Length: 356
Image: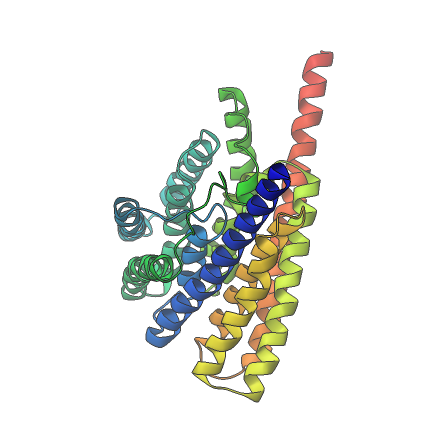
């Protein structure tokens, strides 16, 4: 009887923990959306995505030092992007060679276990900010300031969400469900890190170079490539790639539905309410512990990127929503196909080497 009672208490504790973290996930993201859309600076749609990095599983409360370090990381990365643009963009060949080297070093550091947020925002800094600097250096500086502002706003939202919805005191040892449920993967050998860094650089660098060469101004795809290319699962297998496509497709469909609702009720408060209910829906599944749980986290972040990147500009909301969905799906498909092709070439090369 006591064993059954203990099991029931453990189940109830796990359920309470999932509920609290689901609500915190939705509320924290909504707070970030309110700040981002209320102030509406350049690339403000990244603010909720930053908040999700801390609210998604394992969803532990970050200490003030970690929050301050995160804001500092984004600020330093933004400054590096501006300095790199101001000093080397007048020399395109030199800039591309330096960018090629920096991309390789970032991917190598990511494979060696460098903090993902550090490598991700350095990636955004050296790819997105130079593209904007081609239009205007003042625009690039404004974006750099906006990234730092967004980081501060995201941390404020995360902190307040944890204050409002702290974890209940339970004996549950770990976060239930989602990405935090599995253990850390085994570390890669130096040779494996070099191979992965080379493969990732081959996939990402051509796109960054095309943006600079043709002077493309729509940076959403580039931002998305930067965010996804640092995820280790993207480069490791076809199964992970298919899951990425499915998750982003789900998010794109959800974004279109959200836009249709906003067209009917174009109010800021309604945007926040829809964000909140969507966060509760996707969050409840993200923290469910099901094998498909990570798909819903991907879908929610994609939905927010699509919706907020369109609604931050005036007019043509429905058209921009469809355009952004197609852009993001194209970016995901490009990553999946390109990484699969590079893996195939690496496999053939290693096979030929062993044969010879």
